[in-house]
Length: 267
Image 1 (tube, rainbow, N blue to C red):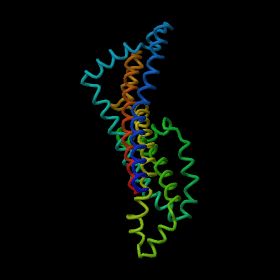
Image 2: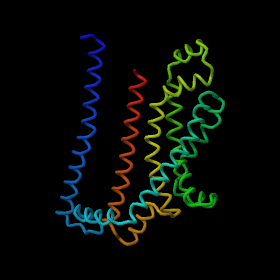
Image 3: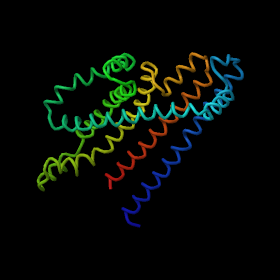
Image 4: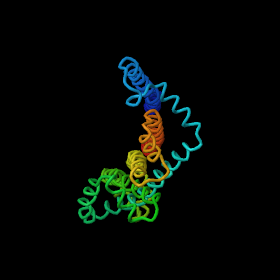
C-alpha cells in the first residue's frame, strides 16, 4: 500500500468517525437533558406555568403543529432570516475584499465597524421601523446588520491568512486582479466565508425573532409574545424548541458545506 493511499484511508476513516460522533453525541446529550427535565418536574413539584412537564410540551406541540396558523408564523421568520442573511452577505463580502486590498480603507472603517456591534438589536429595531416603509423590510435589515459583522470578520481574517507565495506565483503567471479574485482568493477563502455564514445565519434567526417582538409582524416572535400574554408556557417551549431546531438544522447544513469546501481546497 502506498503512502498516499494509506493517508487517504486514514482521512476517510476520520471523516466517518466524526460523522458518527456528530449524530450520537447530540442524541446522548439531549437524552441526558430530558432525563434531568423529567426528574426536576416530577420530583420538584414545580408549577406548570413556571416549568411544564415534557408530556405537557408534547401535547402542546401536537396541537400547535396541527394548527393551520403555526406554520405561516415559522415560514415568515425563516423568510426574514434568509433574506437578511443574503442582504448581509451581498454587502459584507465585497466590502471584505475591498478592505483587504485597500489598507487605508481598513484603517478608516475598523473603529466604526467595531462600534456598530455595540448597538443592541432591541434599540435599533424601532429606528428601522421609522426609517423603512414596512415591518418586513425593517426586520430583514435588522437581520442583515446582525449577519454583516461575522461574515465580514471571517472573510477578512481568511484573506489575511492566504499563502502569499501562491498569489505571487499566480501574478507572475499573468493573472490580473479579477482572475486572482475569481480563481485564487475566493476559492481559498471559501471555508472562512462559510464559517461566517454559519455563525451569521443563526444570529439572523435571533434578529428576526427579536425584530418581530419589538416591531410586530407575523412570525415566531409575535407568536411567542401572544403565548407569553396568555401564560402558555408549554406553547412557548414548543415555539422555542422549534426555533432552536430550525437554527441547528441550518447551522449543521452550512457546517457540512464548510467542511466540504475545506476538503476540496485541500485536494
